[in-house]
Length: 449
Ligand code: PHE
Image (cartoon, rainbow, N blue to C red):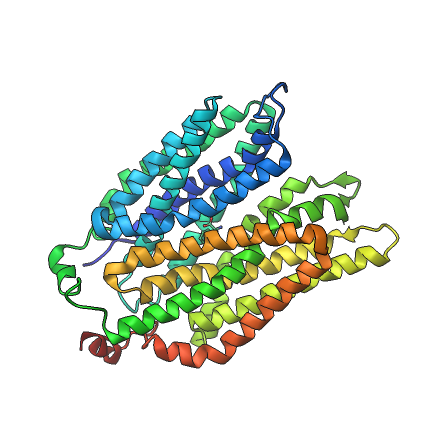
């Protein structure tokens, strides 16, 4: 089929881009004020729920885990019953209902809202990601770039949300903040439904005739099994990456608040602003990074997903070495606080690593997963991100006793080890993908056998 294109990509990509932009606006907006709402006093002008910080952080940790962990179920539901497209719509409705439930000042409604959002994101997020892959035929070289574009959309939403939802939530009312998050998701839903005409051929439930030849009766082929093994191995790596990356909202956040000199030209940069840095950097360097990788590949150099992940892990390791530099600097300088550039530099490296790992993994999954488990594999990846989030929280807690230097050091070492391991395994793992990333006529033929 011939798809209509825009900027060289299928038009459907832009429908998914804007839907996910708004979904992330809703998600990150709500997340930006969740802990603040929980801990605000019940007697304040803008009353919250009056929880202690510890209670609030615990809920935040579990929420962060479940909201992605549900992806497994969201993926399975899409594969078996709904198809990805309908799952996105149902997920979007859940999220809208959830955000508006949070606007009601009542505990039962609060928990109902959280559960609805967890289920909604679980249904929507992995499935819309799989749909991006579905826009490109096998072997289409634009797929990786498509995922990077999609990733930039995600981060435009993530960048704007804390500023808007955060501002109105904190300064006017929490409930207005949650409503804005709800309206964000409504906007996403409208884009998705009205853009449906560009998505006719993606995200539909595979017909029985298309899957029956595989189902039960026929187990996965050797090639399919090998590819699943590579995916599962890459998922293990991804846990380490997200456990490191998500320090940003926890340990690095507190570190920035207490131990970094945030005064710049007489103005003290608010700690929360650092929470927009990741998204800001992605929007800033997403396109140039995609271009660099493309050029690197075109020069005939190794540019498989596994190789990019290895590079990403090493860069992540360097970012934590930079944080160790900050801790050391703070211990020897007169101020007793770390200069801000360590943190800015570390966040930048986080994002260089993220762009080498995260959109690459999404694209890789859509190339390697067997068709009948496409959504489930994507959902499992999100579950892994959820576990990484929880592990990040636990590392942050451990740092309260062990100290930052030690924990930053452990993370740097773990990323370095995983990175080198991947370098050594690139050839072996690539062989196990059976050319899924190249898709030459020989590969297509071998798959059919
Ligand atoms: N910033 C990314 C996003 O919100 C983080 C993420 C990547 C979350 C992959 C889940 C899976 O999409």
